[in-house]
Image (cartoon, rainbow, N blue to C red):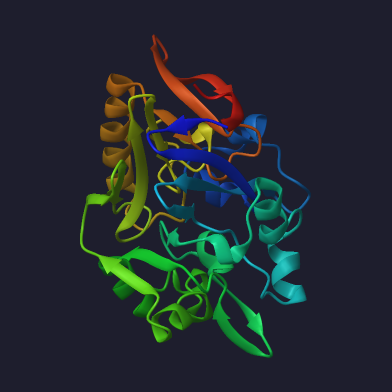
Length: 283
């Protein structure tokens, strides 16, 4: 497995789901996005929920955790939840939930934070009982007083039990979380989403979350209709991609159904992915 500084990196697959293709690509015509991500008969495109686990320096750190297992049949049908479970994927990587010391939540939309909690005897409790959960303070405030566009994605059962047990730690703005691990805050998709940058002499890997949900969202106008501030996303994406090119970042894609990690290259037609690969093939 690849190593950055003291951390060994593991991919943790949290299953698949489907969202409306038009919503995922905003103003982009269906004839263009459907060539890249063909929709089903309900206009939904298939995507991954892919987490990143970092092991080292006395910590086991999980970045996001998928949709979880608390949903009813109607919810599962709407979003076509399927595939491997979080526990199975952790086991495949050599871990159990009790091993996790820290969970970094990029934001609280259900497909990123649903696995934070689980049922125990009819009660909703933290899934990772030995972990501290890390979240931006501004985002928690937004989730507790949601705007009408995001209300359906902020499910209190995914985060309030963490606060009730004292396991939720909030942060204000960008900065180092642990040596070699930095939080990068963006506000286009949702208020105070935090990306995660892992740095070492081997290189830099950035967990893109929903700033770049798939490789097909690199182009400036390819912005999700879900984003609460789409023009902010355009500006944040341009700044992010400039830095990624200059510093040769490896980008980790949470939702792309085919590409886990890729670097970037600039061409006459704009910035494109270069050398897409599995995490195991990195460095």
